[in-house]
Length: 110
Length: 113
Image 1 (cartoon, rainbow over the protein chains, first blue to last red):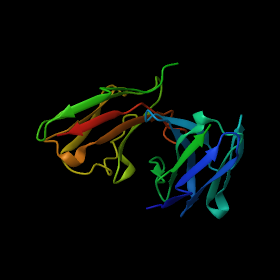
Image 2: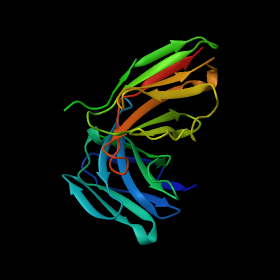
Image 3: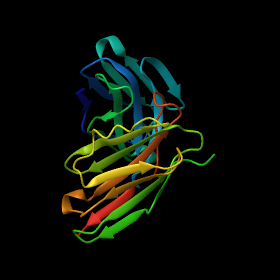
C-alpha cells in the first residue's frame, strides 16, 4: 500500500515563530488531508488539498502531486497550535480509505 | 450543524467481554468510516460503508470485529471477546460521497483490562 512519511517527528517552537511540516507519499493520490489532533484527541480538519495551495488564516498548505509531497506552514505560532499534525492520503488504488503518517508533535512554548 | 458523534466517550471492559461502539455521522453524509488509533500502530483504517453498497471490511484485524450500518446512518462497531491488544481509540468519520473531506468524531477510548 501507499506509504506516508512525515517530518520532523517532533518540533519545539517559541510563540511567534514560523514552521514548516512536510509529508512525503509514495504513490499518486486522490485526496490529501492535513489534520490537527488536539490534546483531547479530536482530529480537526485543516485542509483538503490533493494539489495546489490553500490558506486559512495563519495556516497554509501546498501539495505538489507530481513530486509526491505536501507542506504545511504555520506562521506566528501560538500555544494553542500545540498538538500532533497528521497528513493522510487516499491513493495507491484506494478511492476512499485514508492512510495516515505518524504525525509531527508540535509544542509551542509561551 | 452537528458534527460526527460517538458513544460512549470512554469504555473500560474486562478481557473476554463484548463491546459495542456507536457512531452518528453528519446528516446527509453517505460515506462512513471506522479507524483505530493505538500507540503501536498509529491511525489505521478498519471499515468503510458507502450508501447501500457492501462495506469494505479489509481493515478489520480479526473476525472478532464486525460493524453494521442501519438505515444508511448510524453505525455500530462490535468487538467480541475483547483482548488487551484491542485497547485503543476508535474513531469514526463521515464524508459526503466518499471522495471528499472526511470529518472525524471525538472517538471512543477503549481500555481492556
